[in-house]
Length: 273
Ligand SMILES: O=c1ccn([C@@H]2O[C@H](COP(=O)(O)O)[C@@H](O)[C@H]2O)c(=O)[nH]1
Image 1: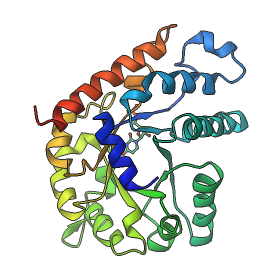
Image 2: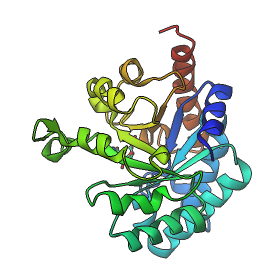
Image 3: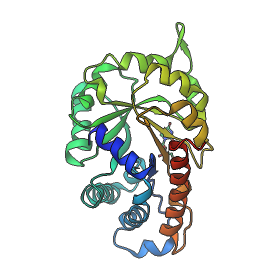
Image 4: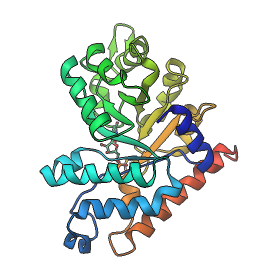
């Protein structure tokens, strides 16, 4: 998907919400466990109920890999379903990959060509040659971890390397890489105050912002510093939407949570806040 298509979908829906599909069989409604493929059944119901309020879905691959081959098949069915039923929706494989060049190329092929995701999250630690193989794919997007939402972000990312924080060097240096126009960045909602400085370094790139909902981030704060004239934000929320209920009304409850967030986003986009 092109960035222009993503922006047009955001404008059409007045939403920049990304629903995280982090499926945990201990948290889904127990009656779904009788199904042939409970993970896919859960995802399909959540997607069908929430797609009008959201512009992106983000399965975190850990939640599928944890169930072995069955989990990977459910991930494959989920992305095929999204690409067939809702091709206008942006898809993110939250896989946090990155390795020596020839290995990164295989990761990129797996997520972009084989599975058909629009984007994949990538760790920057191994540097340019570990990321450029992902960037080489046309109309595919590499979402580089910059400033993550967890406490451990302080262990390396906000440490000064010379005069500059490490995460700022990730932003600045990655902009010089080949096909860097295909870069987006992860910036945690729990560190909204850093977004102003992030925006100075990457004024035009989309930011994937996890940490609203279960991790306590604040949507208005994030928007205050992170919004651009092309919106430039994808706000992810996983547990607070998909586990809003674990009864027979789970999909409706998820839709209600997504609708609430979309209304807030619409108000922000229309300048009411
Ligand atoms: O900095 C980061 C990077 C990734 N994540 C992932 O996003 C979701 C958040 O889930 P919630 O249930 O909304 O907390 C999850 O898949 C994380 O692994 C992140 O939280 N922070």
